[in-house]
Length: 254
Image (cartoon, rainbow, N blue to C red):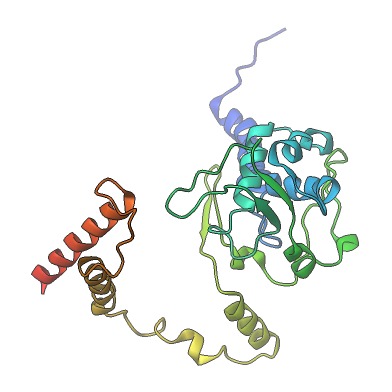
């Protein structure tokens, strides 16, 4: 028996390539049809089975995902469920939350054993034809390969992910704008001009940002936005100070 060397090139073309394709197609990059990563689709499927009408703990909904073919642990699944219910992060939440799911300023949610979710009414509004959703090629994978939304949720909620050699970061859009563009595309006409104003053949003027900062600085300095809890150590006090400093820098730049 001769020992044939297994070269680095062979490793790259086999094991590394397979892993890269797996992370792109089945782990880190959202599906462009329903806008969800597999872990999000698993959590939604578990919600449909276990918390269709009533709130259940996120830890309970995520804790049974292995029964449906998910193999990456309960912690990541619970984190995905918490982000799916975060109204500050999604325009369209497919699961509804009860408890602390974070804010734009403090994005950390409460522990999964203390917060609850159930299927949101948005699911029935935006996801249709469940019987037509294609089955996954893996027989142990119970959720469908993807759901069929009536609007591209990948545009409404945005998407972000980093895989091996590939990454994506799609910003969220307003649903009215997406609907207008879809209707224009189906009718084979140009999109409404009002939706493109300020983006084509033009540059946003600097004074718009400066004016916004000036209004915020003026509001803080004149105590129009100064509630009782605005102490020197509060986050809002820091924001007010940063706004004032930014405005002073912009004035010096004029």
